Amino acid sequence: MRGKALVVDANILVRGVLGRRVREVIETHCETVSFFVPEAAYVEAEENLPRLVVKRGGDPEIALAFLRYLGGLVELIGREVYEDFEAEARERLGQRDPDDWPILACALALGCPI
Image (cartoon, rainbow, N blue to C red; front, top):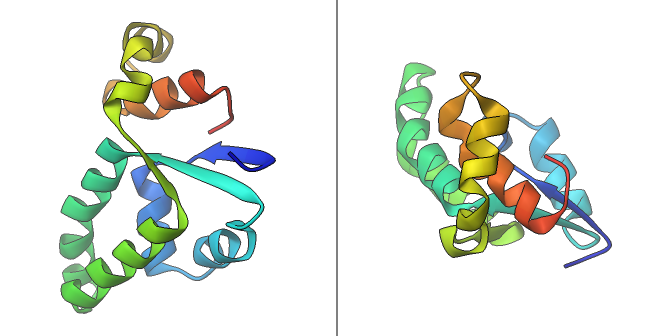
């Protein structure tokens, strides 16, 4: 792990593909900051991105290729790293975004912000 670390969710990955600012932040700081992405969040971005891109009149294959590029700049984290924190993450989230428990569990497991 580099000096600083952040856990990134699917929405940030999608914004990294569709926009410029998030991509610039990741590209600029990926050598000094560890951007951790739970594999579940990457899969969510991969599943939702084509629909969003088509809606905007873009090419989903190009968008998915760019997502793979971003995936090479971040560190994908498998469930085995954060699964012990699932119960605590679900409890903390309550009814607010319960499907986002992998993001919080990953942050808890790695001791870093989201």
